[in-house]
Image (cartoon, rainbow, N blue to C red; front, side, top):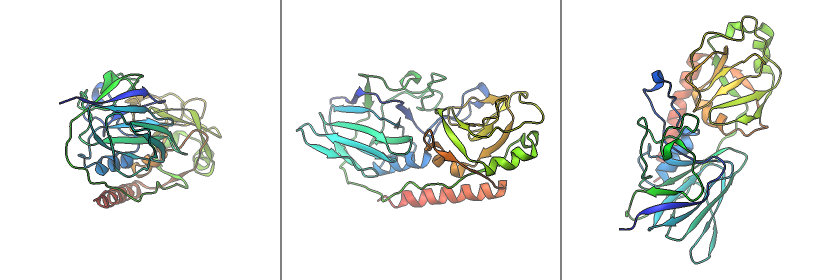
Length: 316
């Protein structure tokens, strides 16, 4: 039997392999990583009948161009994504997100771009034939860990695919990625370090997503946040979504590949229920924050999980 693989004709801007991340290694300085938009990741796997934790190909902005070798595969793409399929017989098709489709040997899939968003996901039935690193396929390019030797996909690479000969029944989902008016946060551990006016203005002012944003962190531009105590503190553990404020007063939101410790005061933490939508904000996008209580954040996270399960159950 021939080996199934994707040949990388164009790797895209930032194309990596991601699953739901790695646990139990925080104490040795290895962050969780994993898919930036968990809900779209899960939907992608469900559309092709995979185990929900199966690794997918995550791409940002301009995606990859692949050619299929060795047989037939079943795929799906999620996110606000424009893509085309070029059949071996020269037919060209417009791709449709949130719908499974077949690619045969010699076909090409061209993931052109994400639209007014950052991340999209390509799932393949049966998953990728890659090696785990620290119990996860998730690539963290800064730490150089994960599948593909911790590197983003490169030109002319072969991405091996597990064989899967099940009959294909097309699956689809009517899904619209929701917009947000504001990002909800709970107060950070160093909330009292900041001036009363800064704490108030943090949720009144509007911030802009900087171009200096990646899987590790999102820098924001706007009115400076004033620290009354100390701009440098003893380094302590960080969590995904925590908002640090360095000496320049411009907040930084820690994202999935963030370092495990940091020494800047923390004014707030983005709630888990808003994290997916946060990560899809493109440079130049405007953000407003809203304080909520820990109890409200926990209730919203439970609701997020229920909504996600209901969405997945719509895929038959």
